[in-house]
Image 1 (tube, helix red, strand yellow):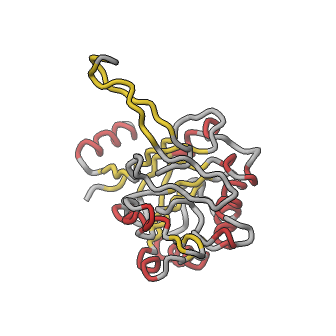
Image 2 (image 1 turned 60 degrees about the vertical axis):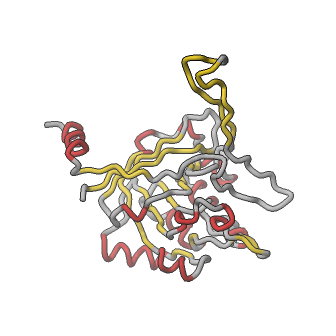
Length: 258
């Protein structure tokens, strides 16, 4: 029996389950807020074309507007100045959109400190327990932040000093970009960088180092608590937008059945 047939049977009998890691995309979806003078992305909006009425008696459909980087979304290298000559969404090889994933869980630490930053030592401690990061795979960083995704104020967690959301240390971002075997980083927060990363050197190091190295980002993920530390397969499906710097995405994980 072929490997694909085995997978189909495993999906049918429940020995492999599919977990949806995507947040719902709607007008209530939290969006990034940059300070002046920077331009901000619009949120998501549906516009009805017809709904079983005189505009179209037998069909319902909409047109939509919204930014590439709204909701659960994919960051292509061309999104950042360090990757400006890199891939847009259409040029990302499909094989890099499916791969093994590991989950590092720092939700307890982030609950105590919303500015918690993942370190290289944290990753090495994970590797000692679970084995090395997977080649051509994804590191998914669980902070419990997906529980806030229904409320923009709680999700962005900003005060007079700016947003406070967990993220990655500068040295960790550089290590992931230059030394680790992964192709991408996935997070539950509004962006791959910490809320306070505007003050880092360089500013927004996950974007700067990861996208500059031709790697990818995934943001506003959900349900990482349903994934094991190792052994899942990630499926990332952004829209194939010509010249797109990113795209809203449906992100799924294949996991061993319970």
